[in-house]
Amino acid sequence: MTATSSIANPLRDPQDRRLPHIPEPCALVIFGVTGDLARKKLIPAVYDLANRGQLPAAFVILGFARRDWDHGEFEELARDAAKAHARTPWREDVWNRLAGNFKFVPGSFDDDAAFDTLSATLDELRDTHAIPGNAAFYFSIPPGAFPTVLRQLERTGAADNSVSGGWRRVVVEKPFGNDLESARELDDVVDDVFTAEDVFRIDHYLGKETVQNIMALRFANALFEPVWNSHYVDSVQLTMAEDVGIGSRAGFYDSAGAARDVLQNHLLQLLALTAMEEPVGYAADEIRTEKLKVLRAITLPEDLETYAVRGQYSEGWVAGEKVRGYLAEDNIADGSTTETFVAVKLGVQNRRWAGVPFYLRTGKRLPRRVTEIAVVFKRAPHLPFHDYDTETLGQNQLVIRVQPDEGITVKFGSKVPGTGMELRDISMDFHYGEAFTESSPEAYERLIRDVLLGDKTLFPDAAEVEASWAVIDPLEEFWAGRKPSPYPAGTWGPQAAENMMDIDDRSWRRA
Image (cartoon, rainbow, N blue to C red; front, side):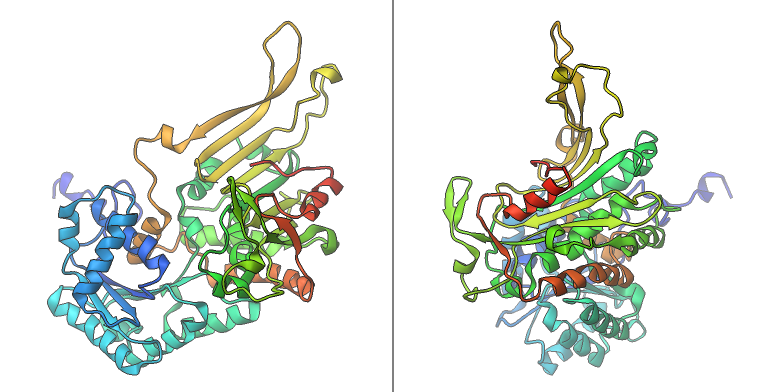
């Protein structure tokens, strides 16, 4: 055998990521395919993957919903959705390769006959599309419907790898449960129907390039590690602000609120990535091990009255447009006490972070849309300059901008040109859009592909979900029966959120 013939094929080596890996022939089953998530994110992501050559030749999308459609009508809807929302340019030749690979099964979640048809349709793909039993089930449906659909898949054998002859995986959207108890109950059902390694709990924030870059920033560079600890870091701020209201999500949002919708998953995951220790390797189990240590080390402040703030937006102005308050939104009950804003102070009790406060805030109808992580460093222990030369000098910051305007900002002090020694803060920026010629893929592109490949690196496991609920449940218990503080739309939340920072002699970063 020659040396050349003994070289491993990188397309088949899971450790070699120089070339994109292509999933095996498979089907993607989308429950709730008529919803916004499927139309605006999932189907366009599938088109984008096809456009980038990252789907197998044998691939089928199978939609399930309560609509009286045939396969052709579903394909036409999918075409419109992809054309309207895809990230990559529209190409007829790409769509023509997908055309004919759309199937639709009408029915409700309690319709046994519909699930029998679904199972039979997947079996038929062996002969019609050369797909040997591989299928991923995407739950783009309300969390309350999860158990019903899971039991239907169990009843028909559609979730059983041994029955299907291939792999069967399930993708569950957040929130996973609405408290620790319900999360554990749902875990039991999911793990009873699917094997644990075939369950993918999706948090789309983990699919964003800027979130993945947190690990690259920290662990691929020697510059940051020496100061990434309580000796040099004063505090960490994590902000996820939205300028929009609840839109058409009233039914879900009014039963969940900002803490369950965002704090429990997105922000705690960002906190874990920011605070985690370096993993042994870049593998799913190794990364989850380090994130779980952080989540289990999180502590709540003793004074929740001061450091756990809830708010609800009232009428106000956003981007020059007058908007109504939460209680005036469609399908919101009069007197609802659901929060649309949360700000909390958390601690991470381990050797690296003890004594460093982590301030988390999220809200709707804030002045602008932004998600960022700001690491605020301690002030220099001694300044050899006159006080009047440093009056406007603040603290050094490293800011990771997750969205929009993705990139990194380093804020530090510099001399102002002139004959004096005046110092002030300046910023040095890195922008993804300027540094790289290729645009970043959408989060769902990456995550759908990883599901089809069976790569769980970017998916929280059950232990992470439970550890997150262990942080949120005491907050929800404290807030029970209390009304959230009102704040005018277009402002940065209720005054109590500013007060909690003032008490600590700090201030929120104006994103």
